[in-house]
Length: 312
Image 1: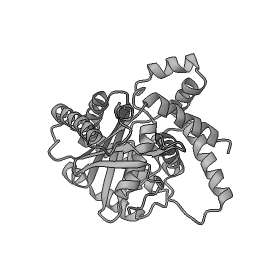
Image 2: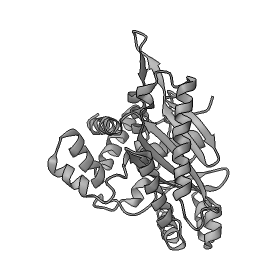
Image 3: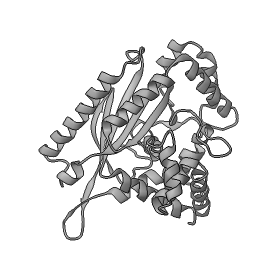
Image 4: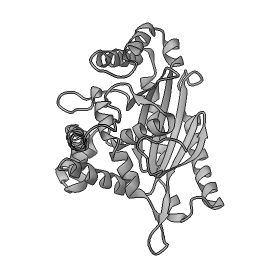
């Protein structure tokens, strides 16, 4: 059985695993009466458990005392809510704050979905064995405003691969991948990559990430766009609403499998047709599609758990 860092209860089902396409679903169980229930609460817990590593780029240490671990969770949760987008969404979702909702609606990245970054972090760690190269907080400034940057900066230690990922959390899958295509168009060009690599190197110089010195050397020597592209994998995660959970109790039945694959192939074909990046044949893109039962309900659940984490 594969070792999972965060999804320890095997809540996430792997469906399609290809070199340029992956898909996942949330698993199901039965309740005390034998009724099928989908494990959405456990799924939310798995996402929330990534937060300390996501925020601090620290790796799990089983020897950390329980009291220190709890404090670390509290500190990480507070750090998340110092980021403007998260705090505005919390106020809108949990407090029905009309002013916050108005500001959320006006944000340029309002459909980006900050929790998509956490899910991308989880999927890369648990299904690709990566580790974060730098703290995600390096793309946030002192006032908590999101700066431009990648949603995930991970490495594969053995293969010396740099994973620069983007994520979208949409109600509609095709709109989500269309936004991802816009990201790769603007982010995977010489000037932008050079700018981001400089930021990553600056962060590396003041932390203790495994293979730190090796990666500083690698990034210093990667001055050509062709070399940079060759060492980068680009995971693009789109999490979106889908009816499969309402239509089927058994996701392993032939009808559910066919329904899911048809949906995934349709979105992938749309992505391929719309992706007109001039270097698309050189870019190592991995499209990751993750249908969920209800985007709004999931975001609310995640905010509730994250907000309570601060007062553990």
